[in-house]
Length: 335
Image (cartoon, rainbow, N blue to C red):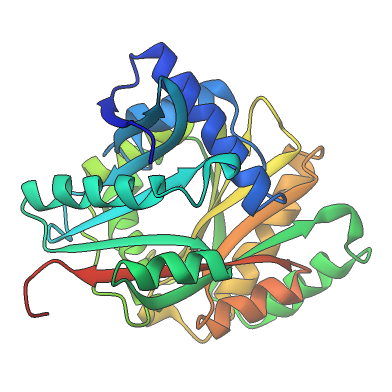
């Protein structure tokens, strides 16, 4: 193997950020050509802020000065403090030379130094991903499906029909539209509601429930907005008690306003059985048709075992784009 050099960089390192950006897009184009490529500004802002204010540690691998791979290490101090989650990619033309193994082993060293006792990673379903996992003692623990909705292909009137059917079962609820940040008077109730995402299936992954707070909610909204999105949140509120029963969030890209991404959808346990999931997602599409009529696609992710939400998505015309496998292993000797 040629002389491989791996170093950590920050979002202020312009050359390294550019190299990582180009590698990430090249890897996605080879392994998941259906994915929308990163834009430079969105990529840098993701490195700065992460998903919700906890940015990843960034690494770049070079051979004789030429970038060949990159990696991100995600850790949280809010919850799951035993875990580090890795994303790493090697340019297709530089694969099968040991660079991925060297990069992974370096990341595991870094993770151990942080005191983390478990490491996870993911990859699109392929023999290559399965073989890499097996070589490094990573066990397949879960799988997620990426689906995409092409709005122009929906049967006319389908969304309205599904919305009306769900609304008939949810007459005790009203829908509240929120653009951008959550209003201060709803923050505490929203924090409680978003924690319902912890009821989503996690299969065999060794992960704990996420811990939510007003600060985390604000960090998520700040990161999404700063990264170039318009945020739309639709909330189902119980008419009698004022309790928030469910919500769904969609982000529309500012630079590519034809692209939207589904973020969280969750229904609180006490409010299930009223078809709120379908009501919210269909209601969101009706809202987007008014506010963002140029939106052409909406992407969503679900654990493959999440039968209920998958049924809702398929009713709304989502179709499978790819399957992502999640792998994990303990770093504790003997486990």
